[in-house]
Length: 204
Image 1 (cartoon, rainbow, N blue to C red):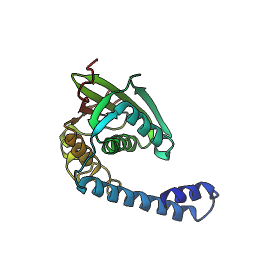
Image 2: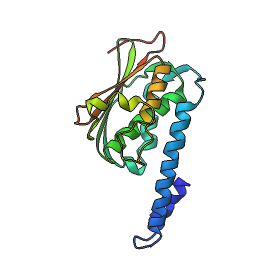
Image 3: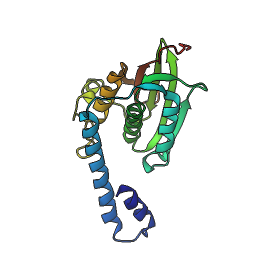
């Protein structure tokens, strides 16, 4: 429904009186998507399929799938990815969900306009992903609260308060860590650490 509504909006003349109705459909679809996706992500059973996953490939794939979307079209990406794969032991679908959630959160914080820096590297036996954005950031007093289910710093109706709660839940399932701090681009910095696949190197 969302995809077809967006296509319809693009086809309508700028003076067409139906544009506002189509915009309402799009916004309500997005709201339903946020609510149902968040609830499913937080409440679904924890059965996972752990295997050797290339986090570098997964991140590249997530970024490529999001860039064409309207929210990301005016965001400049600075990507620092290694040439060689970085393998972690995990569930590819769930790790991709974490990446998608974090990227969308950053883009929404910037209202779809600004810079986002992605740094993926290896340190001390962990794969480390650092996401910096040029948005307004989050007050230090709120940084623990945003990981609580249904807590949100967004305006009413703009978020479910489940995105970061789901991210932390899934990262912890992978024996990893996620933390927030002031970013180098003036906004928020999100740092995710995931244990490397057993037998993988620990080059800096």
